[in-house]
Image 1: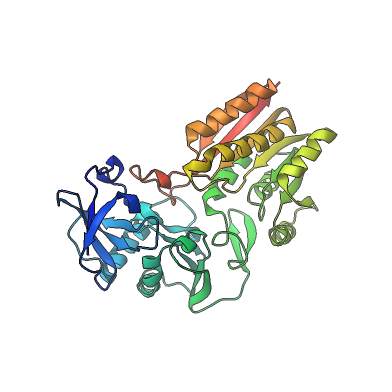
Image 2: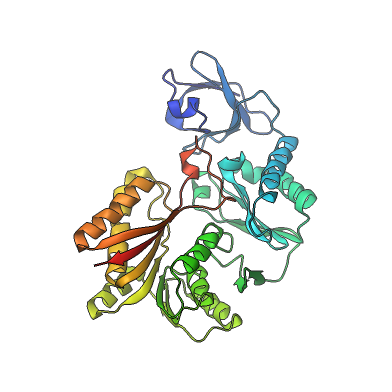
Amino acid sequence: MNIYLKEQIAPRIANGHPWIYDNEIAHSTGSLDPMGIADVFTHSKQFIGRGYYNPRSKIPVRLLTRRFEEIDESFIRRTIQKALSYREKLPLAQECRRLFFGESDGIGGLIIDRYADVAVIQANTLWVDQMKPAIVQALVDFIHPKAILEKSDHSSRRKEGLTTQIDWLFNSVSLPLQLSLEGLVWELDLIQAQKTGFYLDQKENAMIASRVVCPKGKSVLDTFCHTGNFGLRMLQAGASDITFVDQAENALQTLQRNARMNGFAEQTYFHGNAFDLLREWDRSGKKWDVVCLDPPSFTKSRSSRSNALRGYKEVNVRGLKLLRSGGYLVTSSCSQAVSREEFEMMIYSCISDLKIGLKLIHRGGQPQDHPIQMEIFETDYLKFYIFQKSD
Protein backbone atom coordinates (compact mmCIF):
# COMPACT_ATOMS: atom_id res chain seq x y z
CA MET A 1 0.00 0.00 0.00
CA ASN A 2 1.12 3.53 -0.80
CA ILE A 3 -0.14 6.38 1.38
CA TYR A 4 0.03 9.98 0.19
CA LEU A 5 -0.07 12.88 2.60
CA LYS A 6 -1.85 16.16 2.12
CA GLU A 7 -0.03 18.91 0.29
CA GLN A 8 1.00 20.83 3.40
CA ILE A 9 3.01 18.17 5.22
CA ALA A 10 3.33 18.79 8.94
CA PRO A 11 6.85 19.95 9.91
CA ARG A 12 6.58 17.42 12.75
CA ILE A 13 6.57 14.56 10.20
CA ALA A 14 9.26 16.12 8.01
CA ASN A 15 11.51 16.51 11.04
CA GLY A 16 11.32 12.85 12.03
CA HIS A 17 8.18 12.30 14.06
CA PRO A 18 6.76 8.83 13.23
CA TRP A 19 3.04 9.41 13.85
CA ILE A 20 0.72 10.18 10.93
CA TYR A 21 -2.84 11.08 11.90
CA ASP A 22 -5.90 10.25 9.80
CA ASN A 23 -6.52 13.93 8.97
CA GLU A 24 -3.02 14.21 7.48
CA ILE A 25 -3.64 11.56 4.79
CA ALA A 26 -4.86 12.61 1.34
CA HIS A 27 -5.39 9.17 -0.22
CA SER A 28 -3.94 5.67 -0.57
CA THR A 29 -3.40 3.17 -3.37
CA GLY A 30 -2.92 -0.59 -3.49
CA SER A 31 -3.29 -3.09 -0.67
CA LEU A 32 -1.26 -3.88 2.43
CA ASP A 33 1.54 -6.41 2.24
CA PRO A 34 1.30 -9.48 4.55
CA MET A 35 3.24 -7.68 7.29
CA GLY A 36 0.76 -4.78 7.33
CA ILE A 37 3.40 -2.33 6.11
CA ALA A 38 2.67 0.78 4.03
CA ASP A 39 4.97 3.17 2.17
CA VAL A 40 4.35 6.85 2.87
CA PHE A 41 4.88 9.65 0.34
CA THR A 42 4.39 13.38 0.21
CA HIS A 43 1.68 14.84 -2.00
CA SER A 44 4.35 15.26 -4.70
CA LYS A 45 5.29 11.54 -4.41
CA GLN A 46 8.55 11.95 -2.49
CA PHE A 47 9.26 8.94 -0.27
CA ILE A 48 9.03 9.63 3.47
CA GLY A 49 9.27 6.21 5.06
CA ARG A 50 7.69 2.86 5.86
CA GLY A 51 5.42 2.08 8.74
CA TYR A 52 2.62 -0.11 9.92
CA TYR A 53 -0.99 0.72 9.12
CA ASN A 54 -4.23 0.36 11.07
CA PRO A 55 -7.25 2.17 9.59
CA ARG A 56 -9.17 1.82 12.90
CA SER A 57 -6.66 3.95 14.78
CA LYS A 58 -6.61 7.74 15.03
CA ILE A 59 -2.92 7.31 14.25
CA PRO A 60 -3.32 4.99 11.27
CA VAL A 61 0.38 5.06 10.31
CA ARG A 62 3.38 4.78 12.62
CA LEU A 63 6.64 4.99 10.72
CA LEU A 64 9.34 2.43 11.48
CA THR A 65 12.05 3.55 9.06
CA ARG A 66 12.91 6.41 6.71
CA ARG A 67 14.78 4.04 4.38
CA PHE A 68 13.81 1.52 1.70
CA GLU A 69 14.34 -1.58 3.83
CA GLU A 70 12.36 -4.71 4.51
CA ILE A 71 10.14 -4.66 7.58
CA ASP A 72 10.17 -8.29 8.60
CA GLU A 73 11.20 -10.51 11.50
CA SER A 74 14.86 -9.69 10.86
CA PHE A 75 14.03 -5.98 11.22
CA ILE A 76 12.32 -6.68 14.55
CA ARG A 77 15.30 -8.70 15.81
CA ARG A 78 17.82 -6.02 14.78
CA THR A 79 15.79 -3.29 16.41
CA ILE A 80 15.40 -5.18 19.70
CA GLN A 81 19.07 -6.18 19.70
CA LYS A 82 20.09 -2.53 19.24
CA ALA A 83 17.94 -1.49 22.22
CA LEU A 84 19.45 -4.24 24.37
CA SER A 85 22.98 -3.29 23.35
CA TYR A 86 22.36 0.33 24.38
CA ARG A 87 21.20 -0.75 27.83
CA GLU A 88 24.15 -3.03 28.45
CA LYS A 89 26.32 0.08 28.64
CA LEU A 90 24.16 1.84 31.24
CA PRO A 91 25.26 2.05 34.89
CA LEU A 92 21.85 0.82 36.05
CA ALA A 93 20.73 -2.36 37.76
CA GLN A 94 20.70 -5.03 35.06
CA GLU A 95 18.13 -7.20 36.81
CA CYS A 96 15.31 -4.64 36.85
CA ARG A 97 15.03 -2.18 33.98
CA ARG A 98 13.19 -1.17 30.84
CA LEU A 99 14.58 -3.03 27.84
CA PHE A 100 12.53 -1.41 25.08
CA PHE A 101 10.80 1.97 25.16
CA GLY A 102 8.47 2.29 22.18
CA GLU A 103 9.27 5.02 19.68
CA SER A 104 12.55 5.89 21.42
CA ASP A 105 13.85 2.44 20.49
CA GLY A 106 12.32 2.31 17.03
CA ILE A 107 9.01 0.44 17.34
CA GLY A 108 6.08 2.50 18.54
CA GLY A 109 3.64 0.58 20.71
CA LEU A 110 6.16 -1.90 22.13
CA ILE A 111 7.26 -1.88 25.78
CA ILE A 112 9.53 -4.54 27.27
CA ASP A 113 10.56 -4.59 30.93
CA ARG A 114 12.81 -6.99 32.77
CA TYR A 115 12.39 -8.23 36.33
CA ALA A 116 15.26 -10.64 37.04
CA ASP A 117 14.65 -13.68 34.83
CA VAL A 118 11.17 -12.58 33.71
CA ALA A 119 10.49 -10.32 30.73
CA VAL A 120 7.17 -8.47 30.48
CA ILE A 121 5.83 -7.33 27.12
CA GLN A 122 3.24 -4.63 26.51
CA ALA A 123 1.80 -4.61 22.97
CA ASN A 124 -0.16 -1.36 22.62
CA THR A 125 -0.87 -1.37 18.87
CA LEU A 126 -2.36 -3.86 16.43
CA TRP A 127 0.84 -4.44 14.45
CA VAL A 128 2.94 -5.02 17.56
CA ASP A 129 0.26 -7.40 18.81
CA GLN A 130 0.52 -9.39 15.59
CA MET A 131 4.33 -9.46 15.80
CA LYS A 132 4.44 -10.98 19.31
CA PRO A 133 5.81 -14.37 18.15
CA ALA A 134 8.84 -12.68 16.56
CA ILE A 135 9.33 -10.44 19.61
CA VAL A 136 9.16 -13.39 21.99
CA GLN A 137 11.65 -15.40 19.92
CA ALA A 138 14.07 -12.46 19.86
CA LEU A 139 13.93 -12.16 23.66
CA VAL A 140 14.40 -15.91 24.12
CA ASP A 141 17.46 -15.81 21.87
CA PHE A 142 19.01 -12.60 23.22
CA ILE A 143 18.35 -12.50 26.99
CA HIS A 144 17.39 -16.13 27.76
CA PRO A 145 14.57 -15.40 30.23
CA LYS A 146 12.96 -18.09 32.35
CA ALA A 147 9.55 -16.75 31.34
CA ILE A 148 7.87 -14.03 29.28
CA LEU A 149 4.60 -12.45 30.39
CA GLU A 150 2.31 -10.35 28.25
CA LYS A 151 0.73 -7.52 30.24
CA SER A 152 -1.15 -5.69 27.49
CA ASP A 153 -3.76 -3.77 29.48
CA HIS A 154 -3.05 -0.18 28.42
CA SER A 155 -6.08 1.91 27.47
CA SER A 156 -4.51 2.70 24.08
CA ARG A 157 -5.33 -0.85 22.91
CA ARG A 158 -9.03 0.03 22.72
CA LYS A 159 -8.24 2.74 20.19
CA GLU A 160 -6.52 0.08 18.08
CA GLY A 161 -9.53 -2.25 18.22
CA LEU A 162 -7.82 -4.55 20.72
CA THR A 163 -8.83 -6.02 24.05
CA THR A 164 -6.78 -6.59 27.19
CA GLN A 165 -4.38 -9.53 27.03
CA ILE A 166 -2.59 -10.85 30.11
CA ASP A 167 -0.99 -14.24 29.67
CA TRP A 168 2.29 -16.13 29.72
CA LEU A 169 3.85 -16.24 26.25
CA PHE A 170 6.90 -18.33 27.14
CA ASN A 171 6.97 -20.61 30.18
CA SER A 172 5.67 -19.22 33.48
CA VAL A 173 6.86 -18.60 37.03
CA SER A 174 5.16 -18.40 40.40
CA LEU A 175 4.03 -14.93 41.44
CA PRO A 176 4.71 -12.74 43.26
CA LEU A 177 8.40 -12.38 42.50
CA GLN A 178 10.85 -11.26 45.12
CA LEU A 179 13.65 -8.97 43.92
CA SER A 180 16.53 -7.40 45.81
CA LEU A 181 17.22 -3.87 44.55
CA GLU A 182 19.83 -1.60 46.06
CA GLY A 183 19.50 -3.05 49.54
CA LEU A 184 15.72 -3.49 49.64
CA VAL A 185 13.60 -6.56 48.94
CA TRP A 186 10.48 -6.05 46.84
CA GLU A 187 7.49 -8.25 46.22
CA LEU A 188 6.24 -7.84 42.66
CA ASP A 189 2.94 -9.22 41.45
CA LEU A 190 3.46 -8.61 37.76
CA ILE A 191 -0.16 -9.39 36.90
CA GLN A 192 -2.06 -7.48 39.60
CA ALA A 193 0.28 -4.50 39.96
CA GLN A 194 0.03 -1.32 37.90
CA LYS A 195 2.04 -0.91 34.68
CA THR A 196 4.19 -3.99 34.11
CA GLY A 197 4.69 -4.61 37.82
CA PHE A 198 6.73 -1.65 39.12
CA TYR A 199 7.25 2.04 38.40
CA LEU A 200 10.66 1.58 36.80
CA ASP A 201 10.81 5.21 35.67
CA GLN A 202 10.79 6.43 39.30
CA LYS A 203 13.19 3.82 40.70
CA GLU A 204 16.25 6.09 40.49
CA ASN A 205 14.34 9.22 41.49
CA ALA A 206 13.28 7.60 44.77
CA MET A 207 16.91 6.88 45.59
CA ILE A 208 17.93 10.43 44.66
CA ALA A 209 15.19 11.83 46.89
CA SER A 210 16.22 9.66 49.86
CA ARG A 211 19.76 11.04 49.59
CA VAL A 212 18.91 14.69 48.93
CA VAL A 213 16.34 15.25 51.68
CA CYS A 214 18.45 13.44 54.31
CA PRO A 215 15.35 11.91 55.97
CA LYS A 216 17.08 10.47 59.06
CA GLY A 217 14.77 11.11 62.01
CA LYS A 218 12.20 12.91 59.85
CA SER A 219 8.50 12.24 59.26
CA VAL A 220 7.40 11.56 55.69
CA LEU A 221 4.05 11.62 53.93
CA ASP A 222 4.09 9.41 50.82
CA THR A 223 0.95 9.95 48.74
CA PHE A 224 -0.02 7.95 45.63
CA CYS A 225 2.52 5.56 47.11
CA HIS A 226 1.63 2.37 45.18
CA THR A 227 3.93 -0.32 46.64
CA GLY A 228 6.20 2.11 48.48
CA ASN A 229 8.96 3.11 46.09
CA PHE A 230 9.59 6.53 47.68
CA GLY A 231 8.57 5.81 51.26
CA LEU A 232 10.57 2.62 51.67
CA ARG A 233 13.68 4.36 50.35
CA MET A 234 13.09 7.09 52.95
CA LEU A 235 12.87 4.43 55.66
CA GLN A 236 16.04 2.83 54.36
CA ALA A 237 17.75 6.23 54.74
CA GLY A 238 16.58 6.56 58.36
CA ALA A 239 13.16 8.30 58.31
CA SER A 240 11.45 8.08 61.70
CA ASP A 241 7.98 7.28 60.38
CA ILE A 242 6.07 7.19 57.11
CA THR A 243 2.41 7.83 56.38
CA PHE A 244 1.47 5.98 53.19
CA VAL A 245 -1.57 6.86 51.07
CA ASP A 246 -3.00 5.05 48.05
CA GLN A 247 -6.41 4.34 46.57
CA ALA A 248 -5.48 0.81 45.43
CA GLU A 249 -6.04 -1.60 48.30
CA ASN A 250 -3.99 -4.40 46.71
CA ALA A 251 -1.02 -2.03 46.31
CA LEU A 252 -1.19 -1.11 50.00
CA GLN A 253 -1.31 -4.77 50.98
CA THR A 254 1.80 -5.45 48.90
CA LEU A 255 3.44 -2.38 50.45
CA GLN A 256 2.82 -3.66 53.96
CA ARG A 257 4.43 -6.98 53.07
CA ASN A 258 7.39 -5.12 51.55
CA ALA A 259 7.80 -3.10 54.74
CA ARG A 260 7.76 -6.22 56.90
CA MET A 261 10.21 -8.08 54.65
CA ASN A 262 12.69 -5.21 55.02
CA GLY A 263 12.39 -5.13 58.80
CA PHE A 264 10.81 -1.72 59.12
CA ALA A 265 8.66 -0.93 62.11
CA GLU A 266 4.91 -0.67 61.66
CA GLN A 267 4.01 2.40 59.62
CA THR A 268 0.73 4.24 59.02
CA TYR A 269 -1.35 3.28 55.97
CA PHE A 270 -4.39 5.09 54.56
CA HIS A 271 -6.56 3.53 51.87
CA GLY A 272 -8.41 6.38 50.20
CA ASN A 273 -8.47 9.36 47.86
CA ALA A 274 -5.30 11.43 48.33
CA PHE A 275 -7.04 14.72 47.48
CA ASP A 276 -9.63 14.16 50.21
CA LEU A 277 -7.06 13.10 52.79
CA LEU A 278 -4.74 16.01 52.04
CA ARG A 279 -7.66 18.40 52.43
CA GLU A 280 -8.67 16.80 55.74
CA TRP A 281 -5.14 16.93 57.15
CA ASP A 282 -4.77 20.55 56.08
CA ARG A 283 -7.90 21.43 58.08
CA SER A 284 -6.59 19.57 61.12
CA GLY A 285 -3.18 21.26 61.00
CA LYS A 286 -1.08 18.13 60.41
CA LYS A 287 2.54 18.66 59.35
CA TRP A 288 5.36 16.53 57.94
CA ASP A 289 9.06 17.09 57.26
CA VAL A 290 8.86 15.54 53.78
CA VAL A 291 5.86 15.24 51.43
CA CYS A 292 6.09 12.98 48.37
CA LEU A 293 3.58 13.44 45.54
CA ASP A 294 3.71 10.89 42.72
CA PRO A 295 0.21 11.01 41.17
CA PRO A 296 -0.89 9.11 38.06
CA SER A 297 -1.15 10.92 34.76
CA PHE A 298 -3.99 13.44 34.94
CA THR A 299 -4.37 13.68 31.15
CA LYS A 300 -3.43 11.85 27.98
CA SER A 301 -4.02 14.72 25.57
CA ARG A 302 -3.10 18.37 25.19
CA SER A 303 -6.79 19.27 24.86
CA SER A 304 -7.42 18.48 28.56
CA ARG A 305 -4.13 19.74 29.99
CA SER A 306 -5.79 22.75 31.66
CA ASN A 307 -7.84 20.37 33.81
CA ALA A 308 -4.71 18.37 34.54
CA LEU A 309 -2.83 21.49 35.63
CA ARG A 310 -5.67 22.37 38.00
CA GLY A 311 -5.35 18.89 39.50
CA TYR A 312 -1.60 19.25 39.86
CA LYS A 313 -2.00 22.67 41.44
CA GLU A 314 -4.51 21.41 43.99
CA VAL A 315 -2.41 18.46 45.09
CA ASN A 316 0.80 20.52 45.26
CA VAL A 317 -0.84 23.36 47.19
CA ARG A 318 -2.17 20.80 49.69
CA GLY A 319 1.22 19.14 49.92
CA LEU A 320 3.02 22.43 50.54
CA LYS A 321 0.55 23.42 53.26
CA LEU A 322 1.30 20.16 55.07
CA LEU A 323 5.04 20.84 55.07
CA ARG A 324 6.88 22.28 58.02
CA SER A 325 9.12 25.25 57.28
CA GLY A 326 12.39 23.91 55.91
CA GLY A 327 10.67 20.73 54.81
CA TYR A 328 11.00 19.09 51.41
CA LEU A 329 8.43 18.64 48.66
CA VAL A 330 9.18 15.70 46.35
CA THR A 331 6.81 16.06 43.40
CA SER A 332 6.43 14.80 39.86
CA SER A 333 4.23 14.54 36.79
CA CYS A 334 4.08 11.67 34.30
CA SER A 335 1.60 13.50 32.04
CA GLN A 336 3.34 13.84 28.68
CA ALA A 337 0.76 16.41 27.59
CA VAL A 338 1.88 18.77 30.39
CA SER A 339 5.20 20.35 29.49
CA ARG A 340 8.02 20.99 31.93
CA GLU A 341 7.50 24.74 31.54
CA GLU A 342 3.77 24.42 32.30
CA PHE A 343 4.47 22.29 35.36
CA GLU A 344 7.03 24.76 36.71
CA MET A 345 4.68 27.69 36.15
CA MET A 346 2.03 25.73 38.06
CA ILE A 347 4.48 25.39 40.98
CA TYR A 348 5.18 29.12 40.77
CA SER A 349 1.43 29.75 40.96
CA CYS A 350 1.25 27.58 44.09
CA ILE A 351 3.91 29.52 45.96
CA SER A 352 2.42 32.82 44.80
CA ASP A 353 -0.95 31.86 46.26
CA LEU A 354 0.58 30.55 49.50
CA LYS A 355 3.05 33.46 49.89
CA ILE A 356 5.94 31.13 50.65
CA GLY A 357 9.47 30.65 49.34
CA LEU A 358 10.54 27.51 47.55
CA LYS A 359 14.11 26.55 46.74
CA LEU A 360 14.71 24.18 43.83
CA ILE A 361 17.02 21.44 45.11
CA HIS A 362 16.81 18.98 42.23
CA ARG A 363 15.26 18.91 38.77
CA GLY A 364 15.13 15.56 36.99
CA GLY A 365 13.09 13.24 34.83
CA GLN A 366 13.14 9.75 33.44
CA PRO A 367 16.14 7.40 33.68
CA GLN A 368 18.49 6.38 30.89
CA ASP A 369 16.60 3.17 30.18
CA HIS A 370 13.64 5.39 29.20
CA PRO A 371 15.58 7.41 26.57
CA ILE A 372 14.18 10.59 25.06
CA GLN A 373 14.11 10.86 21.27
CA MET A 374 14.29 14.61 20.73
CA GLU A 375 12.19 14.72 17.54
CA ILE A 376 9.44 12.71 19.28
CA PHE A 377 8.30 14.95 22.11
CA GLU A 378 5.95 12.28 23.50
CA THR A 379 8.99 10.30 24.67
CA ASP A 380 9.86 13.09 27.14
CA TYR A 381 7.11 12.72 29.71
CA LEU A 382 8.42 12.54 33.30
CA LYS A 383 9.04 15.69 35.33
CA PHE A 384 10.60 15.22 38.79
CA TYR A 385 11.46 17.87 41.38
CA ILE A 386 12.68 18.31 44.93
CA PHE A 387 11.94 21.67 46.58
CA GLN A 388 12.65 23.05 50.06
CA LYS A 389 10.02 25.23 51.67
CA SER A 390 10.69 28.51 53.45
CA ASP A 391 8.00 30.78 54.92
